[in-house]
View 1: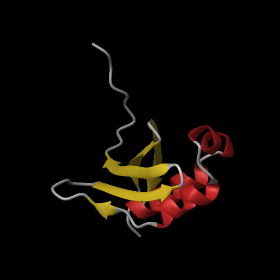
View 2: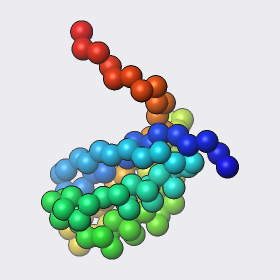
View 3: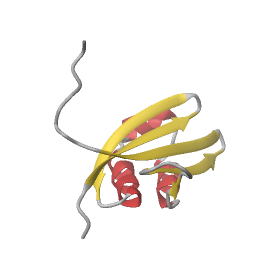
View 4: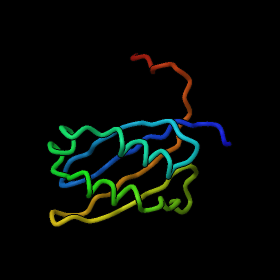
Length: 99
């Protein structure tokens, strides 16, 4: 079993940007965990259904050419394109300080 990493999911849909994080062994598992954790309230406010976001999760993330630890997945709804970028990030338990 691979060690878990922190993944950041950035969903672009209908002019909105929605950012979440999940720990997982791989990008595809991170997307599945993220989808399962999205509340019905959030989905409704984004204008998505559970079935639509599950379809997005079932699409295997594709590594982005010339980028390290970055993937994307897409799907479409009647309302438009869903694009999620997945980024494996380092996690050091520290928040940046403001200067």
